[in-house]
Amino acid sequence: MSEKLILDVTIEIPKGSNIKYEYNRKNKTISVDRILYGPSYYPQNYGFISEALDWDGDELDVLVFADQSFQPGIVVPTKIIGALEMIDGGETDTKLIGVIAVDPRYANIDSMKDLSEHEFLIIKEFFETYKNLQKKKVQVNGFKDHDWAVNEYHECVELMNKYGSMEKDEFIKLMKEQHPEKYSN
Image (tube, rainbow, N blue to C red; front, side, top):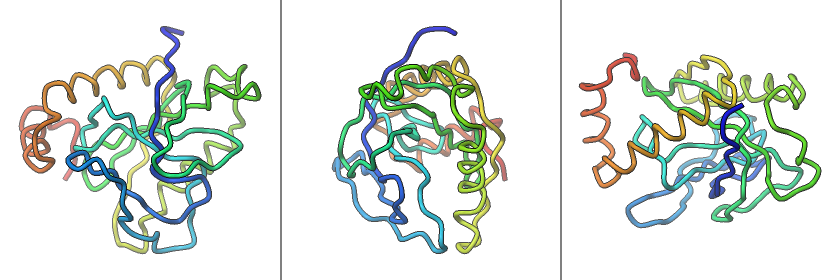
């Protein structure tokens, strides 16, 4: 395993919520985007890393395993253990996976192998189906290990440093031209 990576993750959506909150980088607010259309709820706390820009033009997402549900806007120190690689609306939309770093119950979890495989089946099922009633397609490409997640984080930090001030649509248009492999039709 390469470097141990503990990041500050700002929570957007508490575990167990069906409210889709969205962070707005420009005015630094978290607002209600929608209520999930179906009976799904977020299986873990869901947040973002403010210094990392994903290929979808939003901050890099993180699922944070913890026994508690955290309110939107709260920062949770998170140990990164892996990632979920997926395409949402034709755009790469990676979800890093981590565990709360300040709870001794999670101190011995250093890789995705340290958690139940069933937890990942729940996450996969959620992301494959949570937009079905919106008639939107999400393609889950699979789970990745710690080292892949660390590399993805560093790549997204570079994207934020270079393009973080761009408008989202402008960024996606440029990235589709420069990195078409990150997007699908």
